[in-house]
Length: 215
Image (cartoon, rainbow, N blue to C red):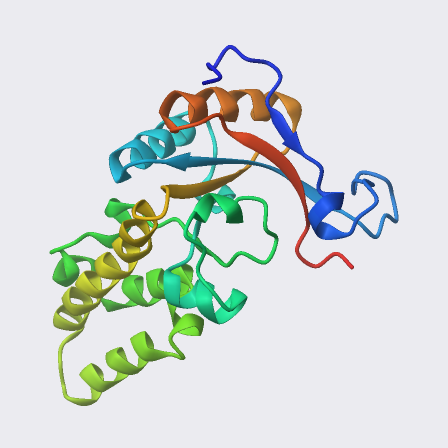
């Protein structure tokens, strides 16, 4: 296994799976703007959380982290769920979801945090699109039935907890939990790789993915 001191991580040629000719988006007017990412696989939720904690302390922001979506969403997007989720590490079509921390969810503290925070968290997980609006429909039904925002928040807190844990538990049976990190530049890439290799089950890799909104 590559230790954190390794300065030559495996780099995947994005042209093999994006159709790009290798041009990055640093040039003005480029039509192939790309984002540099590191990706790693973890064999437990604790290992994943430890890596994310270290990344956060190193200055990485929540929006720079993403996880693989659940099996249902993968099947809807790709037609099948691979036996080894590691095969999706460099697949640009692999569906992702935002990372939601335990602190964000506030399990058991719905009444204190309140309903609106959970609506935002639901949207962040991508669950509204993945489930056709089931989560917000449940919230609306609760409101129509006269359930207070605290009770609705508590209900949704548990719902988000389940949705947060579901893909991780599913993926542990298929090789581990995937985490993508937007590294941006060489200095941040070195930091991210050092942290990821400290906690991942195999050496982290890097790739360039076409930036959202580029043509």
